[in-house]
Length: 195
Image (cartoon, rainbow, N blue to C red; front, side, top):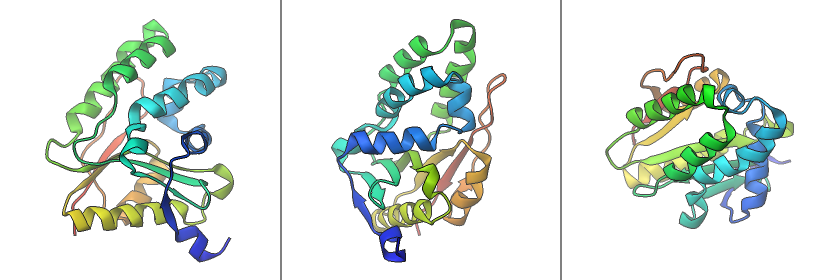
C-alpha cells in the first residue's frame, strides 16, 4: 500500500464492511470484551451494539473509511446521537443480569462526561488487525480534525484501550478523567478543542 492510499479518507456507505472491520478491531478491546467476554456472544451482539452506538454516522454521511475499509471511523456530527434505547436493550439482552449494574454504571458515566456544547463525537474508530501500525488510524483522525477545525467545534471520544491514548493525544485530544464502574476496565474520556 502506498502512503497516498493510506491517507485517502473517503465516506463509506458499506455498513456491512465497516461493521466487520470494527468487529475485528475491537475483538481484543478491554471494555468491549469485558462487556461481551464470550466470543460467540461478542460476534452476535457487538455488530448490533456498533449500529446502536454509532450507526447514525452512515445516514449522516460521516462514516469515514481508509484503505478500502481497512480503517473505519464512525463520527456523529452535532445534533446526531447514539440510539440509547437500543444500546440499553442490547446490554439487557447480552449481559448476564448480575453484571448489568456495572455495565449500566459505565454507560451512565459515559453520558456524564459527554459534552453538552455542540461537538463532533467519535464513538468508534478501528483498524483491521492485519493493518494496525500503518498509519490508518492517524489518517482518519487527521481528516476528522480538519473538519472539526473548519467547523470550529470540539471533538469528543472515549479511549477504551490504554494503547490508543497516546495516539489520540498526538492528535490534540486531552483526557478529562476516568470512567470506571466496579470491575470494569478504565475508559478515558477525551476532548479536542478546535484549532
